[in-house]
Image (cartoon, rainbow, N blue to C red):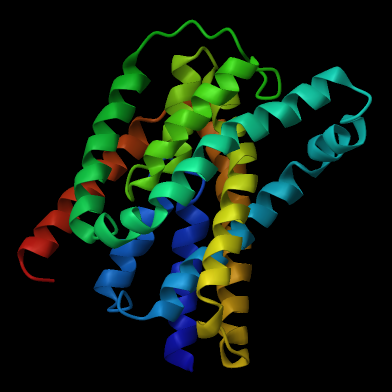
Length: 268
């Protein structure tokens, strides 16, 4: 039991640190599971999805005031209603493609070689975007145009390939469409709520047979650690990227991907 709790602690930290950074939480979790020899156990695969709810709870806590105002004004405030419609538009492409290609992607692309290559490629894209001199037109994640919300949602679908990064894809797309760095990052947080809740419900339903009361404490540890870590990371991340951009995370991706390829080549 102690060994499993330590594994839950490690995976919870990895999830909380990487979920909202443009570095791919799925990719990092797959690599950690591989090198901890957890990748053949269905429980740990489902566990990795379940602890995402801890990270989502962190977003709900941090942005509770803004989200509550949107919820209250959804039927009376046109701006709030447009934002809700925008989030649903951004969420819709992932639902459609996930239902059509989800099983294929998990069976074919969920392997550490793909993760390492996409980490490196995504790092190169992030470096390129970070070096561009964009003239942002949008400074509020809740005020994008509806076509822009849809475009970000289409771009997010690339993150179905592990290692691409859901937050990275949505941040890059938002910046290309005219958002500043902070607004792009914040919208990636908001879009994560329906996306990750949907992924949780789908995976939990498919793998519910692997969940038993014996796993309760292990899941609780991963959930709490993911929640606490995500709160710290999100609050730090926004201020950091506003001042310094995304280069640090781009190089992080390249280094992790390169080290992963070396380890795989050595038979690890």
